[in-house]
Length: 134
Image 1: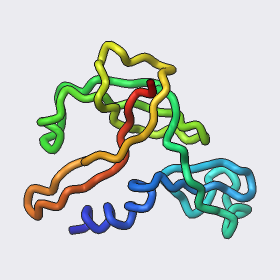
Image 2: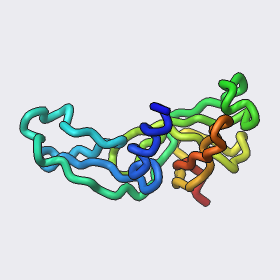
Image 3: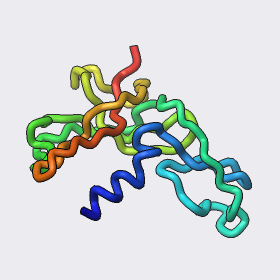
Image 4: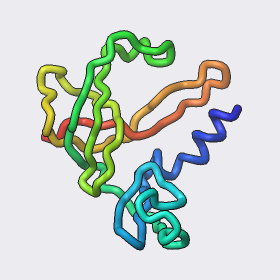
């Protein structure tokens, strides 16, 4: 139950890619934080929500062949480090791509997809993944 409640608490940034921007130093953090790790006290009360474009570029990637049980049906799948245009680097799955077309530096954009399904309750959880930009 704890994992499900955490998922719903984080749904705003999972579904809409909402980040936090420090009003003191302008650094952008995703997922959101309460305090800027760069400015510390100076950022308290100055953190503001900001909408991310969901676009960025591949910094690094790997093709996962030995997946955890929840992802066995998706394998092999691509997991990448993606530097978003607004600054943060995040981990994301790249979908609908020929693995031979993947390259560091290629542009990607986010898409809204099924992340997993809870077998016991049948609840489907959605979130962001990425596709190569044309």
